[in-house]
Amino acid sequence: MFVWLLLLMATGWGTLAIWYSNLPPSLRPWAAGTFGCMALLLPLLVKPRRRGAIASFCIFALVLAWWFTIPPSNNRDWQPDVAVLPSATISGNKVTIHNIRNCDYRSETDYECHYYDRTFDLDRLKSVDLFLVYWGSPYIAHTMFSFGFEGQGQVCFSIETRKEKGEAYSAIKGFFKQYELTYVVADERDVVGLRTNYRKEDVYLYRLKAEPELIRKVFLDYLRQVNRIHDRAEWYNALTSNCTTNIRGHTAPYARNARFDWRIIVNGFVDEMMYQRGTVDTSLPFAELKKLSYINPKAQRAGRDPDFSLRIREGLPGMEKAEVRRQ
Image (cartoon, rainbow, N blue to C red; front, side):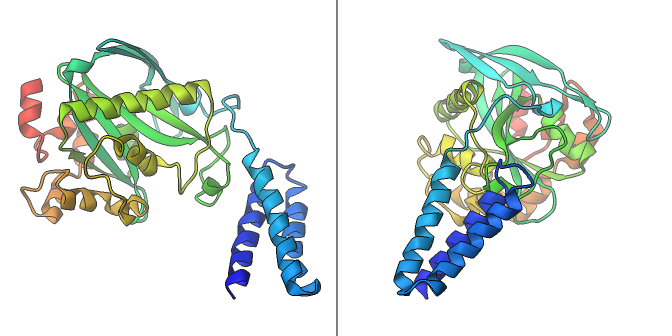
């Protein structure tokens, strides 16, 4: 029974990997169907069955080896919002981020993308905030980190799929090398305003408790990954390389309390996990903290205000004193 369970899992994964592969569309159904039938029939037709099972696993190993050779690419016909990759130049305490995105939206799909370069002083890096974005299920959320520089504003990182023109996101496809990974480095009026004002998703904002030295290490780790992707494409994976697992990858080497938790996967509860670990403000009960952290009304009132980042933080737990100092 155990061998059959492994065989069924391997056959299912291999069939889907072929179905969602880069093979010609007309060939995919035939290739996926042939693999699935052979993998399941061999243990039934070949005697002794052990040999049939071994043959099936060998076929799966060939499919797996082929799948690992499929290369990602930075050269595709990208959607305009992910067509330009950011990069960073680091010189001492000064960091220049190139191609920070700031799109002007008329609707979710009608927009003009603008980009700018900006130099930040690492000595002024004082805060890091977490955005938690719900677009449907309360169990799954999109996570974004935003770094605050005293007197220089915020810079927000959104780890996303890099979609081609005409391509839509699919959770199933996200497991099978259908999307490259991209780090969108953007103005909060762009990546936050898009979600609150146009997509009408529910967005929550939390100030994280962290020492400046830790924030600096995580920020620089983000920039190293930004430059790696700029130089060489990487695959997105809905389980192992997504917005939340990559955030953990950036923070785990430096944070003291970085043990794995099931809420890293079911990340709609990651704010509850952080509350229990004391990473966010704990002066209020969690339910009240979450209610106060909901920023959609503030973001919708702020619109394209140059002070958008300050306005969405007004009155949020753990931020009042910090924001007064920055003003």
